[in-house]
Image (cartoon, rainbow, N blue to C red; front, top):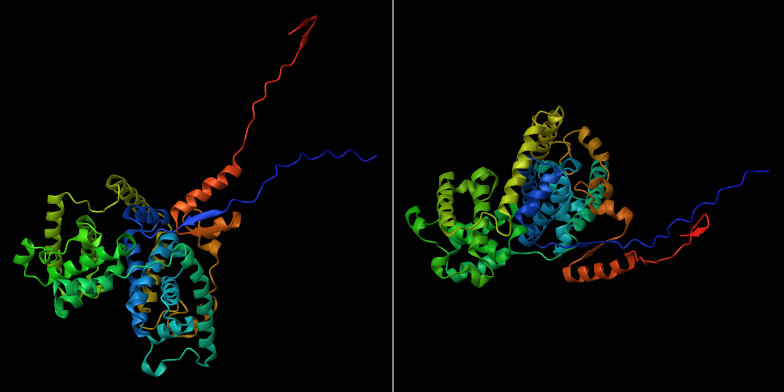
Length: 439
């Protein structure tokens, strides 16, 4: 006779997962930016390098494609948000920049096929005789473009997820032109300089933190200070001299000051990688920075608005300590090699030939085509780098995106009622016989 089979205890009945709700963030402040970069474990120098190279690639390709500046603005914002969610060792920065530009073309209704973007990037690295069209019948190049197309499609979805499907974008150039006309500045040189400074502003994280009016006011003020004699600029605010108050434009002097200092950081440390930086001596930017620092100290303006400065300083100290500790790691050489490879992808190899790092680069040899053929679309789980990303959470339950914070809170409170454990206290008397007595 077979031994009796023990009956399994009935398992707890589980209902459907309540799903995850991701609320879009139209503004990301400095403390959140630093927390994201610290969680990714990227050094400040590496972050600056990847950010500037990616935005420069977007700017070059969009000018070659004759795309408007609004597409450039949107592509840069999507590129920054993508990098805040994914570590730089999981993707090639050129692939991310191309995917951001491809996504921005769809959002701003300046449609370009992915193969057009890839072909334009290829033609930028070759001579006039070697330029191709997107439908070129060369078999090897069709493989390169098709592989790059699959990569862009895979990254496009991640771009949208990192932005929480928020298509609300800011275009400070429109407001900047109105300000220039209001202040009666001539088109040359101040207005054009302010427009280029506004484009350079997207090489920083300021577009994620500030409104359109703040960015326009900061760009115009810096352009006016650059074209004002030093003696007059030290005692006169060129923008407020024309009765332009930040409060009238929904901004504040602290926010404009933060944006100005972000711009001066860019022009002081990376002047040659900007549009307006090479046109002025570095002493001009340093003199303006000294003037603004004195004003901020006199008016007690914080360096970063809407930020806990003490917590931010502690966060940066911890990041610097971890970065210095990683220099003694044996894997540091590999990281340096990866950084060098990334730099080579931007400008080519040491021999002057285009680098085969990415299918978006011009393949200078057969090795580049082989490297491109091996590139595969990135799956969402592989891209999760900062805790539980969108792709990883999607395995446990549906990830839903919302724009209204109040609606998401109401829904969470309503759903929480069905997942609360209800307990009922029951008092029961039990008689226990102890010999002849009843307890």
